[in-house]
Image (tube, rainbow, N blue to C red):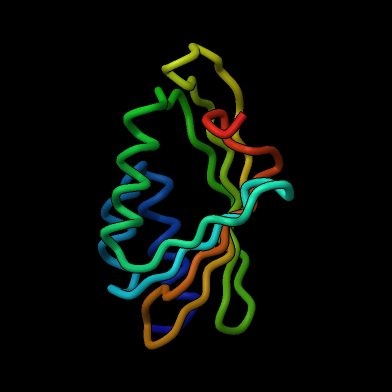
Length: 127
């Protein structure tokens, strides 16, 4: 699969809200996720699918998702970018906001091997 094929398939599943399926189908087993949440804090780097799935489960447990908009993919070489706008309520505080982030993915051998997540502001749970 080309980078464009992976990007289109991944984004198609995300638009349908099938995020777990998108990760299962397109992320490599040794996937690395990098999240520089805030310039004052060290970035989070997760290695392997179990840690990434756990992070996704924790996000889902702590947020009520009202809507997700997906913009892209924007493909260039071995990488592609996808913009996400997530209307969510952080359930521990009841605070509702739109989380905007840009994910940049690297594709090798027909699988996504790395994702870099950039937030326009830290997620609700980090504030």
